[in-house]
Amino acid sequence: MFQVIGERINTSRKKVQAAVADRDAEYIREDVKKQQEAGADFIDVNAGARIGHEKEDMKWLLNTIQPVAIVPLCLDSPDPAILEMAYGMVDRTPMINSISLEKDRFDTMMPFLKGKECKIVALCMDDDGMPLSSDDIVARAQKLVKELESIGLKQDDIYIDPLVQPISTDSTKGNMVLDAVRQIKKQYPKVHITGGLSNISYGLPERKIINRTFVTLMMDAGMDSAIIDPLDSKIMATIRTADMLLGRDNFCMTYLKGVRSGVIKS
Amino acid sequence: MFQVIGERINTSRKKVQAAVADRDAEYIREDVKKQQEAGADFIDVNAGARIGHEKEDMKWLLNTIQPVAIVPLCLDSPDPAILEMAYGMVDRTPMINSISLEKDRFDTMMPFLKGKECKIVALCMDDDGMPLSSDDIVARAQKLVKELESIGLKQDDIYIDPLVQPISTDSTKGNMVLDAVRQIKKQYPKVHITGGLSNISYGLPERKIINRTFVTLMMDAGMDSAIIDPLDSKIMATIRTADMLLGRDNFCMTYLKGVRSGVIKS
Image (cartoon, rainbow over all chains, first blue to last red; front, side, top):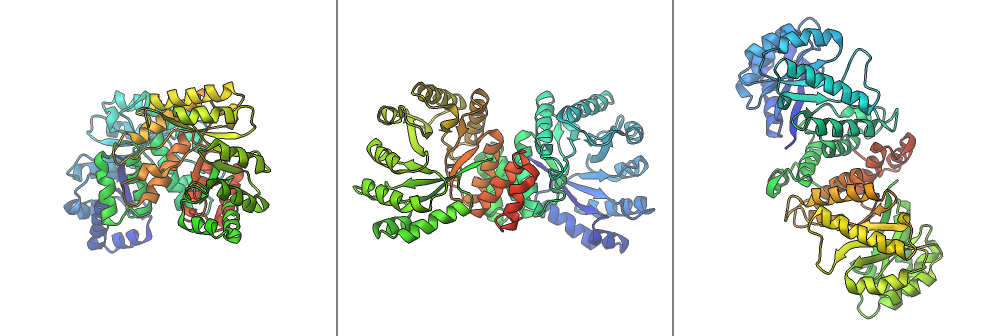
């Protein structure tokens, strides 16, 4: 089944930022509970938006969330010092968001990850910027898998983000990433594919239908995780339906549960 | 771009049957116009439901529709005598719906099709019934293509219907048809894949979200046509969006047109 990384606890979201600034634990806990009820498999926690406060905000967020968390957290920061603190605070093996091939990030994240038990989001980004072709994405994924395996991570713990790019600027950007995902999953069946989806619709109107049609295509190609808002019931309904159609929902049980709960509607 | 075969002019639909019985030309013409405005590439015409009246009903329907038809018709009958009459009445090269490998239908349709200029829907059905595996679908498609080519039809005029089966009875039925479509399109890139979609959701609630998520998956596999209701704006929006994401909509023009007309909504 598809793994949903709930993206809502991020201080770049206005209400979350206000709740963090006010130390409004109730607001944060309610949001986490709602994401879990809606089917989040991980709760992403990003405290990066209040400049100069990331460490204390992350600490407060983790202390606030842990008592209500029933799924693992996804610790989202570019700063290994903050990740080190966060890693020490969590009860369950976390996901780390993220490493990339950009030299600075790579060089600081590799020593942090070495020997740790965790899942890792690995972005197909390097110092040349975004990938320019399917082959480019695949080559970057190969490099990431090889490097992460070399420090002891298992393929099943690696979540490759192929970096979705806007279809509005170039009509081949959809097929580019779909082809790459197919190739990566063929070469590494245990490696997961994740990422944000909304870049695909950047610059176009009615973005949500684009995002949810795209997740269907990406799931067919092999994407088995995404960083999304689990309270967006239309994208969750699409994901549950696609899982069923792709043979990953025995007896349609998850689909039928979604219909009964009112999330899945025609 | 995806080719939509508009399914509404079918006497098995109550309102159409009443309009045909009453010889209500205005009703029929309005329906055809609406389907065309919504993007139908063919108008299916099926007069089979009033037992004993098929020939006269088909004749009346064609005479009624022709003056407003701006797209070709899809002549939908199992009876070659009726198809022969209908074929002689239409202005544009029609689609014929359908031939199959069932001995009776095959033996009557082959002489009818021989030497005719037309497009043909070819069902992967034989006297053993529905196909039981991907390989079974592919083998039937191969046989249909071979036979139809032998009487002069071009691959580009053949629309294979792989026969979608309910996911509720067997969770592998989605992948079965998706895999088959991939194989058929790989072997015959010019052959089209069409068919009804709604069988996939038979026996399940909230069927429309299943149908439109499924068409997205089928389009990724290679389906480039379907027999649907073009006035179902949600499935049309999904088809236009998937076409764009699969790189078949230059500058997102059809998508943007759909947004402006109000058909495509998040």
